[in-house]
Length: 239
View (cartoon, rainbow, N blue to C red):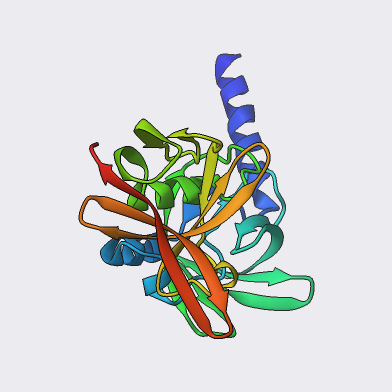
């Protein structure tokens, strides 16, 4: 009886993937490691200058030929068309956006730009519609997540903590932060990076850069074609 149950379970497992391209190898969450490596090397998103169409791609067992893709502004549900083993077209409505290849590495080649990006799997099981949170955590860890002490600025406590989940402690009036990784929010702030500080009553758009263990945060003002940066906070990383 026990062997019969095992056989039936094995047959069900096999058939559950027969009508879908979401295989055990694909299932899970993948982030664009190539983009993150470039950011880490330059300690800046703005300095990288180019970004992938999708920073995070997630596949779930049971979905028939569909995938969740997080881009610069939002997360979209796309369709997957298998061409042959290890090669798929990624489409939305009637448009082909690019080609996914999964052999020794996972890569996505964008149709219009011709750019090819590599990804790594960070979760073997799809955990939910996280709107790119896995990528955001990795980006935060690379750039500013950590503990700091204030060197200059107002509304700063003795210790400031930026978590990789996007929360912040030690700055009065603010509880969350988000780093920009898309072209739209860099308008008027280049060559510096952008951070959005969020409180219960307001969200503030600031610029920042990194110098050794120092995080410099600036207010931004514009007049005609001139952009001015004024140092707002200066923080020293202690951990």
